[in-house]
Image (cartoon, helix red, strand yellow):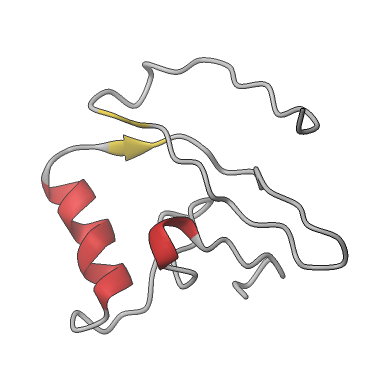
Length: 82
């Protein structure tokens, strides 16, 4: 669970806080290395709200949209699952 009370869990890295673009400061942590790889390649992840809810579990961000331009995505709509 991150500092917002949301277990984000993207790509099995629940330590990543996508709203802040932050991860644990330990460079040996796989989540930190994944986030640093994105930053080093000038890639941006745009999904910052949970995309998956299951019963009483905490919501998760399971879907990522990664682009090479921060302004490429101007608007996202989050809706209930089908």
